[in-house]
Image (cartoon, rainbow, N blue to C red):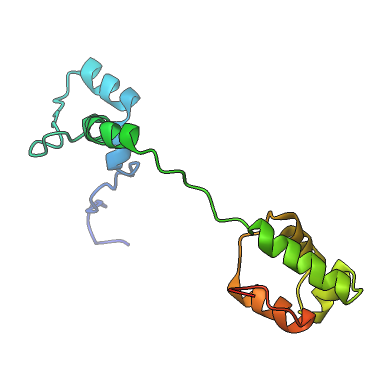
Length: 146
């Protein structure tokens, strides 16, 4: 290194810093308060400028008043049809005539025994397919005129 002259460094200094805060961190209450204390500029933007009820629950609460009268006037009973007593008795009688148990009838029509119990107790919702299977298995007409 002799004869080169005075040694000098010509590199720029490198400064390592943390990443800039993300947008979520900038909106954080702590970050906003810290910026206020340090005297930095804080921008506030009101969102939903063009929507009438944006940011509020007005739409949800005001529409109910329109439907309230319709709901009050509605007297329709919303229950499912149940098996009529004539059908219950007809199923029971046909089963007894063939000397079958509920479980045996259920096995004949490929249904669970509970289905037969529900039909005979009147709790089932009538299903035409099941009634048709019962008619074939029991050999009796259960629907329509006898």
